[in-house]
Each structure stands twice: as C-alpha cells, then as structure tokens.
Length: 206
Image (cartoon, rainbow, N blue to C red; front, side, top):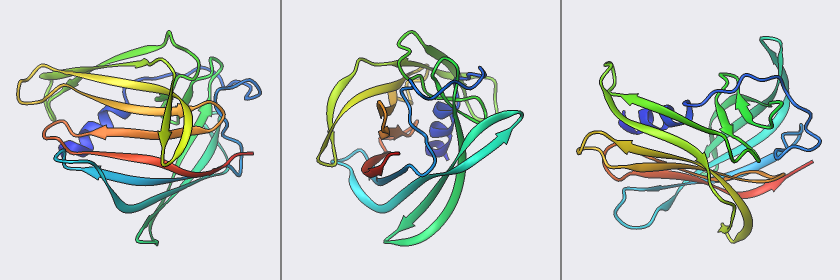
C-alpha cells in the first residue's frame, strides 16, 4: 500500500496547463510509431536490484483530443515471462514551454527548463497531517550507462524530506535523454528499503 502510494504521490505533484508546443525544437520525441522497451528491476534494499522478468513494451499509437488539447496516445503492454499480462494507455503532450505533461497536467519532465521546480507536501493517508515534502528539480546532465548503452541523462529528481523519523528521506528519479525519451526511473517506498526501476533496453524513434 505504501509503495503504491509513494509512487503515485511523487508522480502526480507538479502541474503545467499551457498550450501544446511545436515539437520541431523540442527536448522530446513522441511521434507516432515510436517504441521503447523497458525491463523492470526490483530490490528489497538488501543487496542489488534484480530483473523481475517483467517487460513494459511502450508505443505511440495515435492521437487523442482531451478537453480541447491534442495528446499522444501511449500504449503500455506489460509482459511477465514473455506472457502478456496487461495493456493500458497514457496520454502525453508537449507544452509551449517544452514540458512533457500527462492528461492530468502532471509534469513528467521539464525538458531543457532548469529553472522549473515544484514542491509538494505529503499527508498521512486519509488525514491532513503532513508527513514530509518532496521538491522536484532538474539535475545537471551526466553520462550514464544503462543496460550496456551510454546516454546523456537529464534527471528530473524529486527529493523527499521526511517529517517523521519512522520514514527515511528518499528520492525518485525520472531520467530522460534528449530526442529519445525516458531511459530509466527509480521509485522507492515510503517505509522500508524496497524500490523498483524500469530501464530502457530497446527503442525505435521516428
């Protein structure tokens, strides 16, 4: 419960409702037909993460108008031991200030915008009592090797500061590369040391 809650809170804590931008000079490429394949890794926090035999196969399959705005329709197919387990969709667009946002206005990544930041107070579930704060900020670019491939990474990182000694400070990462998309993410739980990561293993970009 806490693992899911933490991921959901951190993903959904920044908003951007500007009009959609031209994609010609964008940090992002969400053209129809683009494909990305990710492996999911998990760790209990005791020792390194291990491959969970879960694959997320992602493809841009079309367009969708939502409240007058044009979004790209992104299909996720989740496989476990090569067997299709689930199919779901998300909807993404690029704003006039080149932020990548979903259909709720959540900023998935701010692109080149190093000045963008967002802070969010987390309450204990079902209460108005604060338990901590997350501040999102784009980190300096760096080279990183993911699944044997080298990328220039732009990490949109959320740093969680706990108000409760029972819950450790932590961070969540959304690592993107210009013109390619998400390379990896890192999503921890509030309590305990469990975390999971999705890591890019294959992509086709139009």
